[in-house]
Length: 153
Length: 222
Image (cartoon, rainbow over all chains, first blue to last red; front, side, top):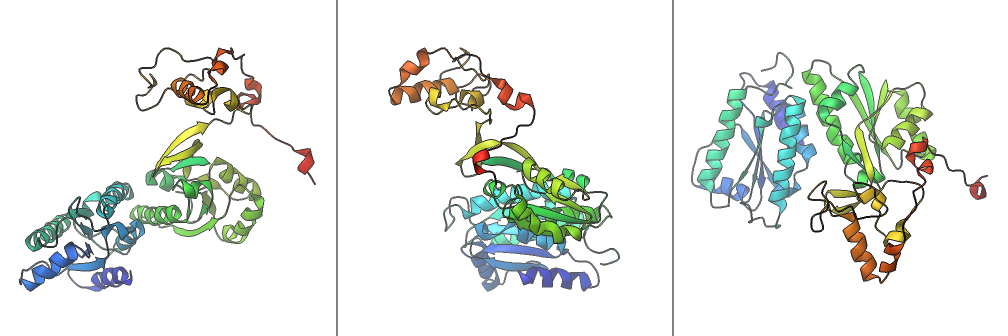
């Protein structure tokens, strides 16, 4: 998960603020959908970094908390449609964990809106693009992660 | 095993608000099994607490360690060095673990990160139920292995009470009537005759109402 640290720290070092989003994408759906979006030359915001995971059920809560602590502005978890998980229920577990984390992010003061889980299939490239644009828009409205160091963009 | 549950992050943050360097101590036994105070839960709580404190403008340095058992001095010894580096300790053990650490390190504040709930079992993934209240005078043999002291909301020894609906307790619909369970169990093992016995009043003097209990087993003393 060094990608989280590198990406978050890199974004902090940049000039004007642009929201930095991590998208944890399941190999069997969202990652393929993102790939398909690329093949079809569909445009989506460049400030989203895709982390390829074997299943959203493999994403530990620590990975997401670690990303926020390092200053990432938003996290998108993109898993298979409910009932369509390659591992049967990995996406359902991820859903429960993300709901728990959203509550925890509220308690921390980071805010639940910065974490979102979406479900899509490998063929839903336009939906992937749309969901990415939505979270970027939401996070732009929220402003930078309050954990970024004071004075940093 | 002992079943516990984590306190909210807001409460955890408040517990240590006067300290700048704190040690989070997990326990590798009961509370690891009930997903409340093991290595992973300590890690998650540390992330959350650090972020919450930073946002409040009072950053805190957190060290983490998880020992095999917090309720035994043999294992607590390992904490001497890491505790020495910190102002305070947050124990992710059960109430016994918290107190064992506090006794061993009289000069350090020790706070509890969990609410210790009960003695119970894992019913299914992430569902625990209470089975024993540690009354000190086990009567399970009389009731086919189902404890009315714990599982009957009225602790009735001569039940049922008459308030149950079908096989559900009147206190909560999701709770089975302990006396219905006792009847079924005694029936299936052919010991329904046990129900003909009127149970005399229980000796609560050796239960928790007599204050903190102590057991000395001379045959094992050295």
